[in-house]
Length: 295
Length: 314
Image 1 (cartoon, rainbow over the protein chains, first blue to last red):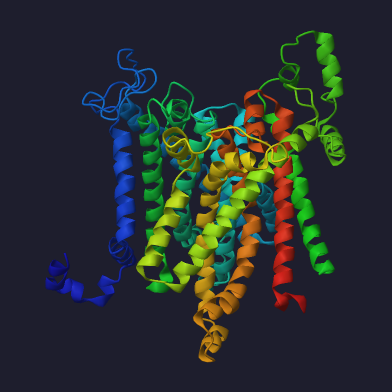
Image 2: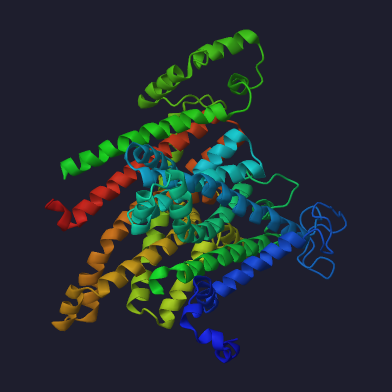
């Protein structure tokens, strides 16, 4: 790669070489742990997407002849208390986990970013009201709020995602608000105002793109937290409902069979660990790559 | 000190009001007629009407809210639908258990997190630092309920060293109480230790390059004295604040830990309440933890003020 680059005359031009996308990508690639994170994330996404195509038993198919069988050739990761294939449930469970991570963070970004932009840009009363509400939401621990919402909305994967999304919203309001406050006095925003651009246009064309990088980083890291939150809620019985597979509820069942079938607890825990690790490393790597101060 | 605290309390007031509105609003998320939920199996129209009267469900919503807040201020958070006990009483019963868990976990967190943070800051960039960071990242990544399950498997099932579940009050048998709580508090403590370690590390790194640390070294003080007396003291200020702010993580962690180890505390209470559709208990717990968090914040502000002499002159 570097060999080819030095041979082409175009790359000698420093201006072409420092296009921002290239810089970010280059920096990201040189970041070993970020690449590991990226690979882990892509691996789990592929597995989740390919679940219907893989030659594995149905995740809900029971086999009373193979109850709590240790890992073997027919069932690579063993079977559970009613003879379901653990690997199949694990792979289908990846769908629930990733979906919960992405959808709940999507909800948080969708509500949090506009509210943060409005609070930061307009200031005054608008800001005061939004900020007090943010503080109130932040005062309720993540999991307690999610539990309360799951309790009142009824336990299901969808409601767990909504609950986690609402709990994560204040993080994005705060972050966006802070970013907007620091860039709204920049010259290019002043000039946009001076030439009489309407406020919505300033917000979408000048403010939004410039607050995007830190939000991207935060979103990646929050997906990790959201996946743990979904697993926790499912572990408590408030997320994905049986018999649909999810890593958290697999662990909840496994807890009762630790003596006889420890493998039932091994795999879901390891899966959560690696997917969360993946998003955490990816987020840290993105932060370093997108940080303009180091260019 | 006093005006500073008063100002803080004034700022916290609207937040507490918003929290109370949010908690009150929860019951309006219930699908269908709330009275049918509150009444359980009961379907007699007269009884339903009496209940509606009792819970003021015929009043306009703002009136309902004011009545609810008025009661809450007098310590009346309603009655558990299941046990008919007042919610406040129920919480007061379970709270000591969770406080014991919280204190023991905090001890684990501080004993592991702070020395690890100091070590990795002092040895920044070495293998020790690297290992400490990897361990801390794993601590943040590992779901603590899984760690709990694995520890039960190892310590209780395979080695049979510690009980896997249950609770013994310290007043009954102090050492047995500590023994049963050892594993749960370790599980909860390690999760917090990771956060503490990371903050101690970055705070120490900042302080270690300060002028007064260089001066202390230049005048020939032993490295141990420089680190523990000059650097750590200054680095600790933000860490003390952070410890108070870990309250939220502590509560959330307690919910899961109590569930794994079947400890009859606050966390188990809220989860059981959810399954029993005991809404007053859920509301009570959310309200109390949120207000508790605000007070922890105030406490953190006060501590920061006390520990940081530069603020006192203002």
